[in-house]
Image (cartoon, rainbow, N blue to C red):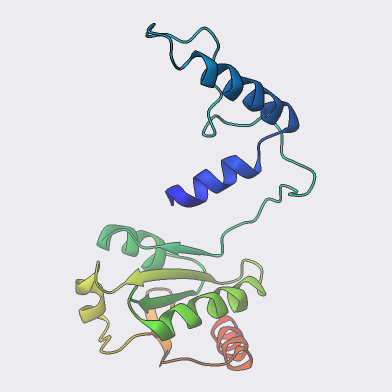
Length: 172
């Protein structure tokens, strides 16, 4: 997370900030031998927020299609009480197939533009939910509508199978 923030801040430096940075580092290097505790020139930090985005990186507003379940209460509120059908992706950070299925499933859900939601449940963090829904292997995807389980599958599926699974859940 910190790496992404640092990279984003570096990429969003404007030309003015870079010019200030160059002059600041020259004066800072020459004044680094002074004994005073405060520098005479202000230093520019890479972590300071930028006011403009460069033209090469356009800012696009992207709505997230999935959410991470925080606790049992959050699961009840956002999944069981949801008016939309919800796909629950039970996964683990150490699971290779989960890392492949997750983005594919998000892409399939995004194609349906808000007619279905997707919840992600890490089985290491929420063992109680995994036991409650009978998850014995990961990745496991369970489809719920109105608090009831309507369908599920275990393992990886290709993009066409995922699209048909999501469509079937929406049409039920």
